[in-house]
Amino acid sequence: MNPLDKALLCVNIILERKAADPVLVEVGKLTSITDYFLIASGRSSRQVQAISQHLRKRMKEEGFTSFGIEGEQDGHWILLDYGDVVIHLFYQPVREFYDLEGLWIEAPRVEIDKRAINPTT
Image (cartoon, rainbow, N blue to C red; front, side, top):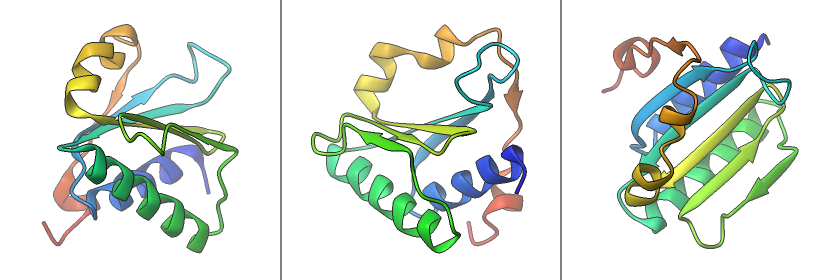
């Protein structure tokens, strides 16, 4: 699976748990860390944890295992590393404070059409 398809799969999966305001940032030309950052948030730390657990379960079903997970116990900022896609899940006030979208302002955004990705919404 190419990195963009993998990133879009992650978008679909987090939307199954009502992740808020997903932003997909193409960072591959600006860093060697990964190809895409997926940034999203939840309305509570419990929701952020639920999104993370659901993502891990579904990605495993799709044949992907993470290289690492950080922050899942607190649920304020969870980072999941899937190699060419790194997912940042935030409790909304924490997302606003760290403003990753602002830090990566030069990176192109990938258009997310939620109806095309998740037709049930």
